[in-house]
Length: 254
Ligand code: PXP
Picture 1 (cartoon, helix red, strand yellow):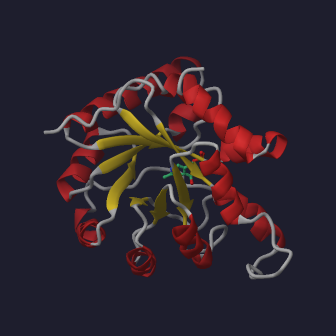
Picture 2 (cartoon, rainbow, N blue to C red):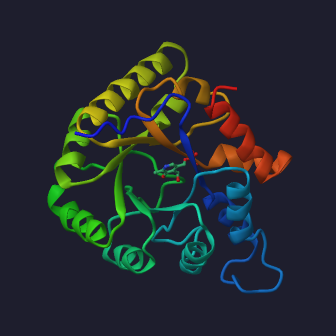
């Protein structure tokens, strides 16, 4: 097994820009090409990469509540950084992914009534539904990640299906306080060790912000962090480039 454990301080940032599209859709649904449509998703991606982000992450949801089909194809043509497509395991979105050929796909659970992705993907017990999707994405040269709860059985099932990466869901950690937060951090740490031993690249995401990054960066073996809401929120005050630079600095321990 090759050791793909990152050097300390070498965490990489994928900025999830879904909420830039949320803002656009609040005013201009169905008007992607109108002359006054803003904010511009390509300009947002460019600002993130100028600031040093290693990747751009978008979630093309079945209900198209924020990112639209045209967005992902435009991003594919203009973004030089890694493009990570988050998607539910449906034939419709799989067909788009295979045409789009993002660098990476992260398979996520999707529920129309949720405000954001609530839990991890149930990989264990659902191998039959996922096997063909993982195989087709990999055959197209797309690296595959599974967005899972930090649990051994989900990690083992992801590795057995041929995923190269897992993204550990940090939402429960982000919402917890005090001893409960310590326990969640321990849970993520144990899962990261286990995933690394299973030969998987270990990523994390959901609810990571400018404060809890100090704890998240202590988790061993982490490579990519996918962060959206806190960066876009800060950008309202500081601008997107500054918000990305500030997160990168905190990821590096500043
Ligand atoms: N990673 C995954 C798989 C997600 O679904 C999300 C939310 O869309 C994120 C990361 C980013 O979470 P947040 O917006 O809370 O930073």
